[in-house]
Image (tube, rainbow, N blue to C red; front, side):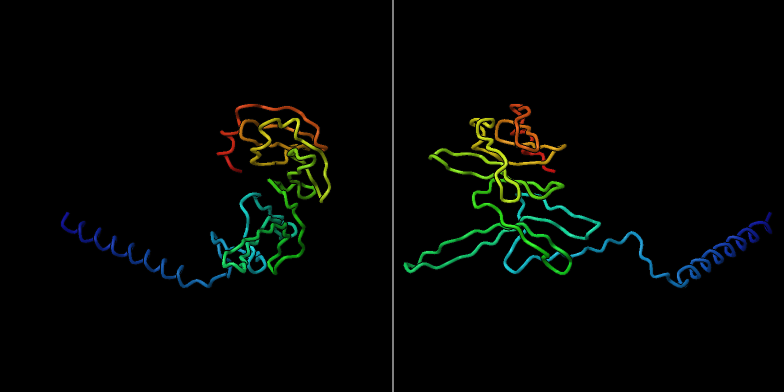
Length: 200
């Protein structure tokens, strides 16, 4: 029995030394140059002074390696009387890793918008006949006047989302669904406040 203990100790030391040697060999093995579990971000720069807007979520196209987004430019101008005036511009950008590839104007009366497969859609205000109208627009063209179907909730429009060939308009008190041509489908009242807390 007295001989067995020294033999087991010697065996344990040999096995641990072999394990350490194996570790040294793995650490000194040539590297393949492939990193795993590492994320490398790509920057899609906006022009100087422009900032990404959180009103419309940006959309990434992996096939083209582009990002389509809404951005804004805020400028300050000092008036003759010493006061400062602010101006605010918004524009749609198609960004590449080398900078903007193209831009698109946004209506001045822009309320909210969304990117769909066929481009940028938005809701904008118009005050024809001194009455507020909420218009669905695409590529600078008015597609439909949604004012009547939005009723009083139209003054609190929060979001527009593309959905299955049509659109969802989120207001303060309801979610209203429309076809791609702006025809009314249905409305669910009372969900607006809850859904405004749930972002994409």
